[in-house]
Image 1 (cartoon, rainbow, N blue to C red):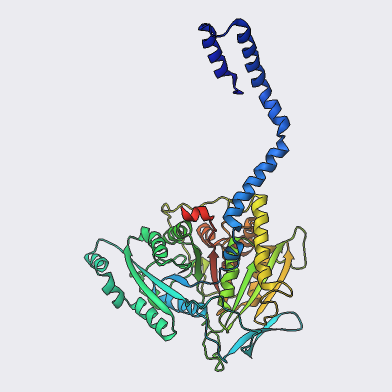
Image 2: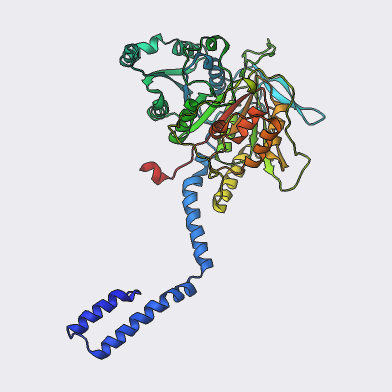
Amino acid sequence: MSCKGLVELIILNIGYDAHVINDRIFVVMVVMAIVTTITTSPLTSWIYPSKYQKKMELLRSRKEVVSQISEKPKNILLGKTNYSKLLVVLNKVEWLPAMMTLVQLLQPLPKSTVKTKVIKQTDNGEGVVALTPVCSSTEVEHRTNEPLVVHALRIIELTQRISDVMKFNESEETILRDPIMNVFRMFGQLNFVNIKADLTVAPIQNFAKQVVESVKNTRSEIVIIPWNGAGSIIDDSNNPYEEVLGPREQKVTSPQVASFVQGVYNDVDVCVGFLIDRGLGVGFGRKPDVTQSSGIDMHVYLPFFGGIDDREALSFVVRLLYHPHVTATIIRIKKSNVPTDNDTTLKKTNQLVTHFNPHNDIELQRPPLAHEMSTTSDHILKSNVERELSDEADDALLSEYFNAGTGKFINNPRINYREIATSTVLQTAVERGKDIVKQNDLVVVGRGRRKAHISHREEFSEVLKNFGLSYGNDTRKCLGDLAEAFLVSQIASSIFVIQGSIPTSPKAQKS
């Protein structure tokens, strides 16, 4: 019996005209059709009230989000430090030192009697780095014995010149003669790192697609790309001084870089990290330490707000801690609705900054981007269900590492972990970082442009107003509000901006 009486009335009229039903039955059926049609909506609202409908919709959405975000949390949330296949993009000679340092940190050293770095607390609560022999309390346990495989991708621009076509046809021979690949391979041999080089030739607008294809072919779990800001993605033969002095880090991100970065973020389905190099591991003013068998001495700072990107950033920091000469400060920063003692206001200083000179920067004539960059705030979690699940994921990962009594790193002197609450989360994170890291150190931040917990838009605008300068809208869209706040505040250390991969349900993975 249909609740919509239109079809029933049509059939009744046909039957009545054919003398299949008499007048009495026709009237009864017409009245029934009218009554059931009129009473359907009120009866449905009474049996299934609006509160019940909202509850069922919430449960359905929760099941869908759980299947996408929190299914098998042990594998998705707590096992992300086992990077065994890494893809690095090397298109310029000046990118080599930083990438070598980072790869060496990601390659765990064998157990030995070398001294490791620890953080000793002073009377004022600050951490001081000191040397101590390796022991069970300072060692970070490896989750896997699988060696690290580094896939180095070199992309050459394809033009109409015959020499470029020859390079395309003779890519195998070009790899053997390419100086960047040769230097990186030699670095791998000297440091016992398994490096596999690959060279491809493509139009510059297809560089992001080449990265995507390389990730699929190598099954890499993380992609690391040096950030070049206002420079070009490839070597610029028109600027000979860049080869000697290196590219200037300017406040305006070039359209070429912005399009490439956005293409990588949109199309790569694994973790992606962009490295802003300021002398990583070999910063100016660093004194050599003859007591170390390794030349690396680095402190890592991570401000943790929560969300997919911050969880991936935390896992990356844990992987760096496999190296005995790496120490870390991790601060979980919670948003407070009232002022606290931790509140900070960033203000411009008169220090000379060699990597940034806003007066010499020129606004670029910007052509349309090949990849559209969103200007909306859809990257902030708005659903209460998603926010609740993300909070549970944050607490699960942090408890795995820092829970009192059961956390793996709770008594590790190489790691300084604490939680603070502040109403100025972005400015407090940057100010703490300026006090913690130096030029040869590293700041690791989540990009915070997808499913983030906190929007820094208002506070970031205040930072730009206080400093009177900006690296441009494209820089903020590429790297996120927090990363650009570190750049604007003129922090001396290198910055690693990481975007985590969004877990997919088993059904999506099979399809």
